[in-house]
Length: 267
Ligand code: ARG
Image 1 (spheres, rainbow, N blue to C red):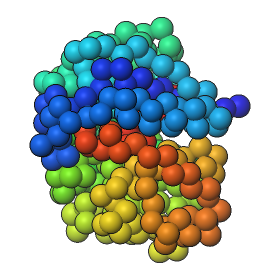
Image 2 (tube, rainbow, N blue to C red):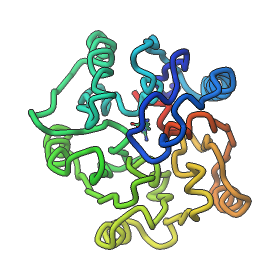
Image 3 (tube, helix red, strand yellow):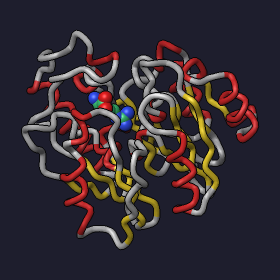
Image 4 (cartoon, rainbow, N blue to C red):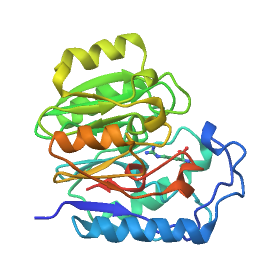
């Protein structure tokens, strides 16, 4: 069975406010035609591997395309996001509406906690383990709530680099206990935490050059890895580990601080 993924067409996508460093200086700079072409090509490539569902775009929410931030879906249990920034809080009712008829379980967050969904919460395939980021958007206290609700181990990682403000911008769990990540995005303690959970041969270290082109923001389906960019060494490393990297450029979306993974939500 193909995995299910949620996406949102970029009809109204653009940079209209700045809530992360990538957006600064980019207001009004998105080329809508290029964005639509890049998104459509990615959508078709993904559709060959996954069942892609769509939520209707709306004019007042330009970041709705980043469906990774809708919430977190684990085995039919949906935990909706509460966005840190008011600009994105307008997306909450739209996602709530979409999920209302599509989930068997829906658990709201406790009051006053921020959580930005699968942008800050990544499952390790084949294990009952959730990696969760905090520091910029999601509150660390929300991790505890996720652990209780999902009944799984949640490993908290502190993000310290403003350009890598969501966990999925700098960390990507892969198969067979492997992970790929950009170390400079994490504090020293979190790096030790990663090392304690993942054996050296299973750690793929991403260079700054690849990281700033969102190489960690990859979508894994089967052994196919869709990413905006990966240099020759990273490509070779991934291939050696048995993956098929597919470069699917989404440069217009980088202007808003997101790439391939942010444009999808695993259902
Ligand atoms: N402009 C959006 C924001 O700052 C980008 C979200 C990227 N999403 C992600 N999962 N990293 O919230």
